[in-house]
Length: 90
Image (cartoon, rainbow, N blue to C red; front, side):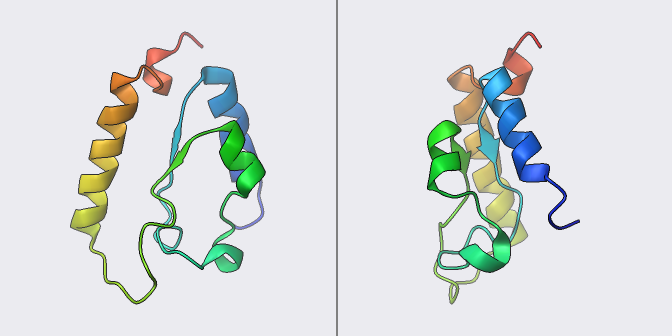
């Protein structure tokens, strides 16, 4: 579902909860793929920490297993800082 406002809602929720966002979009992990992937811009990235963006050159391969490992590491790091939505009283 493109241009439905998911990013905007996610940013609002993260701001309200004091949470961070881990991107699950397989294209956003690649640098220089900003237009086609609708990555958050600099203003949005200043408001809320985003993770798993711009990690690889588009010529590099990346597996689901590697992605899951990085996502788990980021999730644990966010939890340790107390910035997980699970840590918040909504």
